[in-house]
Length: 422
Image (tube, rainbow, N blue to C red):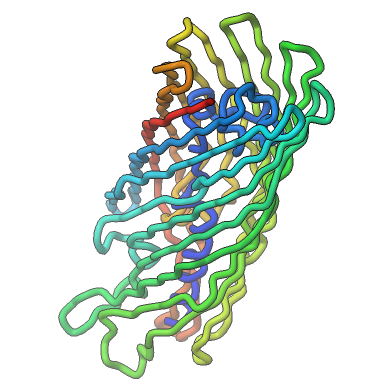
């Protein structure tokens, strides 16, 4: 029983890094509409996220961009061997961003950014077949970053700054596959941690060898997140010496992986702009997750994860129709870092194909409305999670009980933002 509890906590911590199963690529409506490209695109204050080095190339003295998206996700699980099916009923997620830059002079710009690269909600049907792994999870992580962008020459700049992260998580699962109280209610635990904070940094460069071509690179550091004094609340526990559960606390430290993005944009003519980004996320740092518990009766836990580094390939087009309308479209392919045997239902993601589009409408010379949409289609996968354990009925020793099936996942995400330049 204790081992089952440990496993649930480890899965909860893992979900923080995955934001409910996938990296939330929603850091700007203009960039998203172009396949979430932007490391080499000088468009608006979204550069604060994509590549701070480009802020100094913005023409206006003051630049701002704010926006929000609505995440409608759907995951279907099926185990044909046992005739079982389940579907998520997740609430709508609303990741946001807010960017600001101020040009001090022709050589130097400063800025401030707030965005939510991790944050999601996943809720499965009540007491579904995988409820011993997860019932529901709610995650939120806000990044706040101070920025500076310096122009070394007329066509070369650098930029970056420190990052502060603040987050929270609420996670619920049943304690095992069968345990109930006297009234038949499933025994469960809710894990809650708030005020989780950490620091990191990012740095980038942008170079224009010719007027029509820009090349960009941006690196975001690994960030160590420390969850200290999180609360674990047990409910519907039968009154038995075999189930000695009581509310306790836990500490855990884990890395948010570093990521490197390189790319280029090419101005084909006055109307057409093409962009390409390659992103490498260094998930390989997740060899193991360690959890320490305040209750001395619960042993500390070291858990192998063995994730792999993964890549994202992004393509985008922008068409300036006239002074009022600018149209955008894009595509990106996102590789999953999860290896076979580690596919858990609170991170139900596989390789995905992502299709994007959108437009900007210049309301005035200083204000534009930006709209985007993203459709993510995850490849259907038949996989399992092989590290759930429970006591063997004959020996009492822990044994692995894999949980698997076929997962079908998709998400539709519309977004709206405002760009201001003065």
